[in-house]
Figure 1: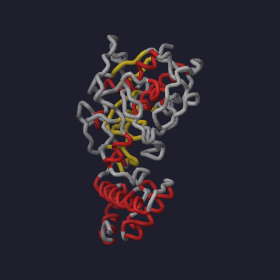
Figure 2 (figure 1 turned 30 degrees about the vertical axis):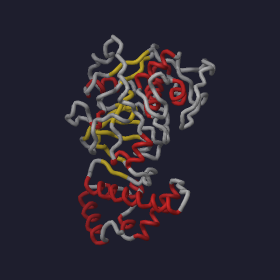
Figure 3 (figure 1 turned 45 degrees about the vertical axis):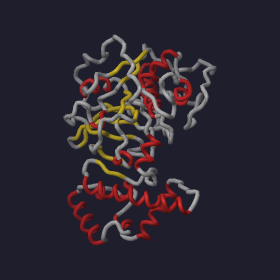
Figure 4 (figure 1 turned 30 degrees about the horizontal axis):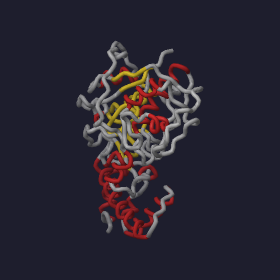
Length: 351
């Protein structure tokens, strides 16, 4: 089935070029398709084949390939229709384009918001009195952020969020950027957290404190599945933290105060379809506040008058802006876009 007539596409494309109003006016290599790809079934099949090649996709049977092609077409339709409507961000044909939205949600989320929240220590929010916030902060440029990682189809986002925050404070205090082990948390932090079946970052911070630290990723590499705890590993070379604090809930200013001083662990609702295919820009799309995904905030800034928070995801460097998403702030909602201010926390480390 042809998604849109050739003449309609030409008219739409011309209008968008003139108004610079959608991702169609962006480089087509960014979104992964061109209007010409939507003009016939043959071109759709060609696009699917080239997409399969790009992402090294293979299927067990012709029937499975046909099924995935139908899902791919439906996702492409959604991506194209969204790109014609939105202006601040755009969607693209990423490696998730052959997954239905339900499949994607089941495979790539992993925050367990149903767990009882840890009671916070009696100490106050340490950044309460911070004044004169810088206009922008980017901890990547300050050397406190490791490369983007990929959790794969294991619901371990909570471990990646935790580790990113610990890697950040460790670099800030010691000057050493060390990639740390998510797998150790998945295998060993099992009192409340459940490995690939989800968890919460505060429990993971607490585990790192009581465990005497966390190993380097090289010493305890990621398996993309639940493993057996290797707690007899040498403790030399582990990275320690002193404790953790929660950022006051639903308070953007408090989050920015903390973020100006270190990367943070945050929870968001990331199960929206536009999140699945986010490719670039400042995301201001529809999402709720039912927290289902743990990520890390690594900075904030503004672009063309739109304020945003820089979020490091754990879906690999092919997703979004090389693994990152810029999420709009100053939305007027106390809980922030996708609930980003509802559950933020950060580890502490004594100098």
